[in-house]
Image 1 (cartoon, helix red, strand yellow):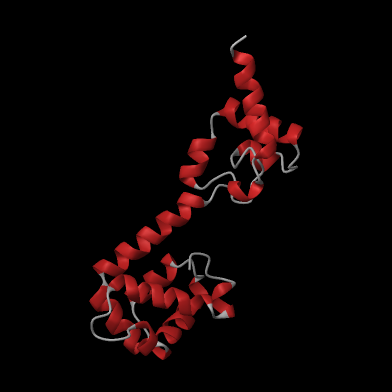
Image 2: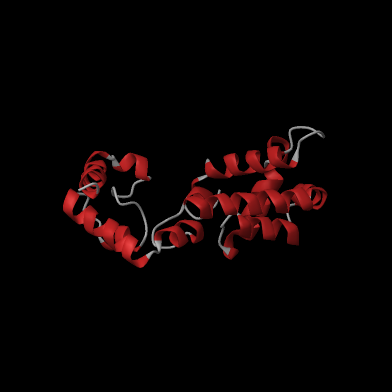
Length: 164
């Protein structure tokens, strides 16, 4: 008899959880069940929730970015970008000033830009050097933020570079 209130509470919570809190997923969240069952009504979401629980894949999906889960994957990309910029800051500053270099190519890759756009990224960095490096005291994280903000305002990068 004690299990009935818990089951009722769980089912009730599935009905009131708005999908906004689930980052665009249904009430069951991401995972195999959520990607298989897209309908955001109570019974299909219970099925998705059950499937996620039965397979036990939701935690793996959230940490690896699979099965339509993407939160932590984006965080990992940001950390990789920050670490790379921190470790290669001096080289990147020089390469951005001239508009070419291996470090700049790697940063372009870390920003999720296609290989074909490396020259465009390098040209953008050279043209916008003064706004990316505001002064000689610009920190690596500030430089990365300025670069990403500028690139996200450019349609060519916003549509093709998936980690800015």
